[in-house]
Figure (cartoon, rainbow, N blue to C red):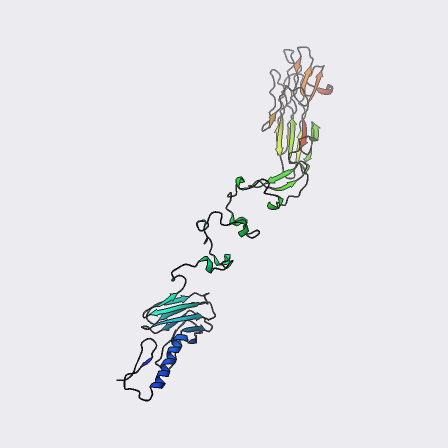
Length: 422
């Protein structure tokens, strides 16, 4: 009977009475084959694009790469690689992926499955064939545990841990002490918002060095404008007019007059008093009682303005009085553009009382019978309250509220204040 060869390592199996005189040589060949399977190292170049490289095991005495216990795969690969070994054999290998190139490498039997190195994995795997498939021996397939005594101090760094790998359930209470933390190791992104409450802080434990700088210069601010963020921190501060008193008058004029008012850039609010001219009176009605013109409208306008502001204004004159029919003329309106307008009082008709002017949109309506807008005349009949305007006085001639001896009603006025006081 002729010699045969073993299934796994292809060792020559000699029968009795055969190979007379050559047994010693063949035995040595078999021992070399066994030595290669136990201690041999071989390299296989698999360079190139995607391909399959077949590793075979030849009969003794021929040595084969696939028979080595250690195989290193080499070469620059430009595509995914497959390396096969014969199906039906049972053997163990230590395989090193020594290739260059970011592509996968799979090690498998011809007809079965295997294990794969990822595109970035250039490591070493312990593999064995069960006769059908290639199986890996690694940390995921081994039983048992790695005890703390087998881990050197500081051997497991943060780079070895996946995100959220160490959960609170894995830490004993108070296991992480301040001595375990490097300076500045716990950053803001590691702290859940609102987890550090006042009860966790010792008295006076938060000093200036523990607070994030806000960029606000240490100083004393006058009439300060302050910005506070959502966390209660002061992020900006400057001296200015914010919160300053509305105490500085900057414009006063009586009618008839016109001009342009330009705001001081330091002011962020103005207060405007507007008075319209009073209506003229009728001084010789049929019943001998003088008819007073209507009071001019008057109001206060509180006007915020954070940008530059320059607007025209006009101040109304008092209406002209009349000795009789058809009646007197109305007072003029007083206006500051884009702030407000107050309307003049109506002139007195020949046989009825006149209506006062209005102050639409005013922050505050000024009473029409205020002393600063009050006139009085003496005529042949009873004393009569005169037409409204800005001013005071008692007139002693037959014309209601005619200042300075004229026959017209009291004129309008404008007064503007800015909040630049301190």
